[in-house]
Amino acid sequence: MKEVAPTIKRSIELMGLFLIGVILVIGHTVIMPLLMAFFISVMLLPVFRFFRRLKVPETISIVLCILLVIMALVLVIWLFTSQIRILVHDYNKIEQHISGHFDALQAWINKTFGVSAAEQVLFVKRQSSKGFSYAGNIASGAAGSASGTLLFFGLLPVYIFLIILYRSIFLRFLLMWFPAEDHNNVARVLLQTQVVVKSYLLGLLIQICYITLLLWGILALLGIDHALLIGIIFAFLNLIPYLGALIGNIIGVLITLASSDKSIHILYVLGAIALVQLLDNNILMPRIVGSRVKLNALASILGIILAGTMTGIAGMFLALPVLAVLKIIFDHSTNLRKWGVLLGAEKDFKGAGLRNP
Image (cartoon, rainbow, N blue to C red; front, side, top):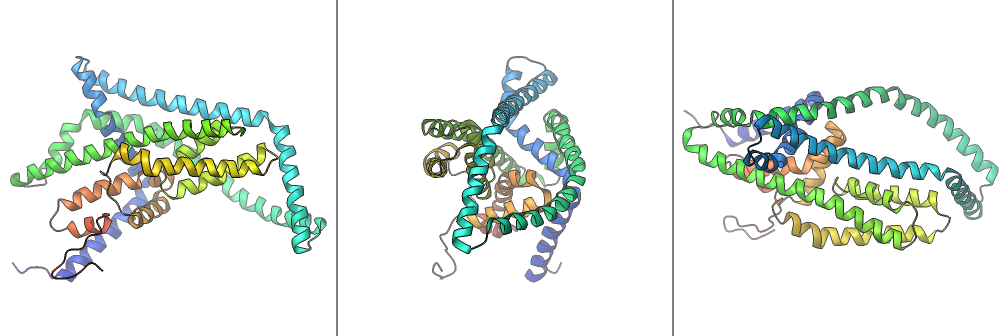
């Protein structure tokens, strides 16, 4: 049989990637809950096995694992909503601070650009009318978005239960796609995938806890109001690599502007976030996760942006673990190894007599 030309192979691979992207865009409402349930199931397997060692029936063990996840989620939601209630309770103070900041901004614009306060108010009114029409369009799709979110989280427990319950069937189905001589290699890929997913997701949970506590403690010592709320929001947004930290900084500044009339507090918040990020990126997170997720920054950023564009916020959260799993698969495949090199962080280049570029 004549061997297919390399250019045709590359074209088929690129067409396959394009087809996968189309399937993700069209079927993300079904695929994303399944992916999320898969990763959570992998992380829950040690807990499930612990219950099984205690002679707990299989079905009850799975239900107990799901209940632990639900309890943790309820605790986070309660903590977040309680902080929001405290913020809303300070409405009068927030209104005064925002008014003071707005007056100071008006005076600065008038002094710097020569635009009077009346002209600024007129400009704001014109832009507000346009903004309300745009907000109406967004609100029209809010019901659909809310129902999609409810469906997403409603399906998660069902998917987790079924994935753990039928894990042996999925494993047997996967092995049937490969000849018997490749089963050991497939087993190594599955084991490495399980280790990477568990270490990464467990690392993220630990990261949420220590970022929240560190940021809360530092901001509270500096006298910043709503320090715990800023810590919670930044910790969860930081789960979206690179982009989440930027959004977290902006939200932290906005909450500080609304709750304080001192401009120096903004610098305190930005400095505290920078310090926590420095500790997280260079000391804490590398020790927790180690070097298991070896992805280069360019592939990570592009993956997060593409996943967010195609599948929404859930895709941004899942982009890195999906890329890490794909890299493991690519590294163990002779035909796809080049894609693993493209995703990896190894910069040493050893070619046929070629030097590092």
